[in-house]
Image (cartoon, rainbow over all chains, first blue to last red; front, side):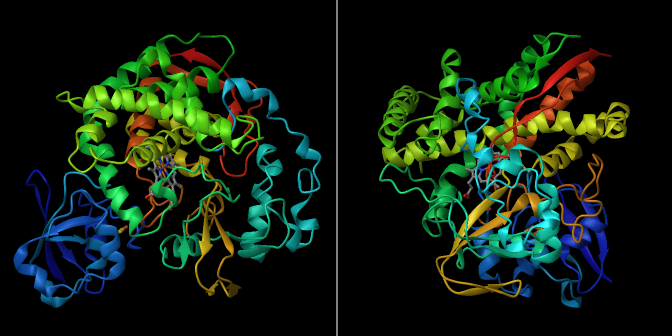
Length: 106
Length: 429
Ligand code: HEM
Ligand code: FES
């Protein structure tokens, strides 16, 4: 199990034990973490699983694919540390990963 | 979006083409050759007979070629996963020149980013999107609630009336006026322009492209006047003030401005209207769901998603293949029309459990196809959901039962899935 910390827009923290191989989005949804809608169920085609990744973790993530970039680039709330959580696979290197959910998903 | 459901054109809805050689009304979907099935003809949609046709195609020929129809040859994509694949491959399946099944050849087409590919699409969408972002919608919520309340309070109780005219159309028109802070007494112009913008000349709304162009000019002048009033004014939470004052949007060329304004009007017109009607009908057809709603109003946000799945206000979006490609084992050629039937994907049992049941507290209700997916995913989806949520909260605060007391009449269109009338009677708590 891999520890992931989700921080809501208002600061509320949720610490979750995530399964390796599943996505960060799934870890949130299956553990009832609010703030992630995942309307497309992880198909990288809705951008409602948007998260801000704490800077020190960014390098440890797989690169952004063209499809993720296409969806992210349309978001008005995009920042340098934006990722779609359904595109982050949980693995042992990510133990302790911290992400923040935006105020709104859309 | 393209249809003629304005009061002035209601009379022509029953069309002579019910007898057309293309119509499948009254036919048994399992007793005709597969290749003759033509979903594009409006007949079965108005007659509410489309479901068994979709079901047969999903089972027997989920990527279906119709070689001969009134609108020419086209592919139909029926399964959830194949639709997702098409919708998320804009480099293979283009949204240009148009997202309706009929090609419109005219120099009078306004630029709208719904029918553009990247990078043009992305640039324009990025500019307009913030005006319908949730943070801005929050500001509009109180005003929308006030207007919804006023309409509901003015309805007759205990006597029959048409829900479509008195609530769905009136509410949608008022909401559009609210969103644009459009002069309230002129609000019906918005619905008219929306119908005209997408009308095919000769089909009832306008007779010629010139007539359509004139109406669009009137629309442009009206909005330009409002723009000029607001551009130098501080504040204003309406979409138009935001466009006029926004750094990225204030220097938009006039035609682009008009295209974007119209896209917002057209996008939110029939879709919201028919979701308002469709929800009432669905709750009447599933009384145990209505009972569930009465016992727990906190289900409303989830129910709103289920209503939008159930209704699927836009039955399809069309794409055009840019290259030769394969889908579901079929060879699609560059230039072919490819139609994604969201209405069918929303009933696909392989992805959606009990897809043929209306379940207001359904698990994963948000994962329906009605808003599309990928870069063109409906920009107004949060706005639509907010409008429907407010409406149902206010309905439930007032009425025990919105009872359907007669047969609904449906729109003559395979694109806009909706109602021209729905007779109801209201019962108080
Ligand atoms: C229940 C109501 C609604 C439904 C079912 C709906 C459905 C859709 C669909 C199917 C698409 C195309 C998706 C695709 O091509 O993949 C779309 C796009 C769009 N809709 Fe909606 N819509 C609704 C309400 C609204 C509202 C209220 C607005 C007003 C702001 C709106 C504005 C738009 C815009 C601007 C686009 C173009 C997006 C793009 O091409 O990037 N829609 N909508
Ligand atoms: S769940 Fe839709 S993009 Fe991640």
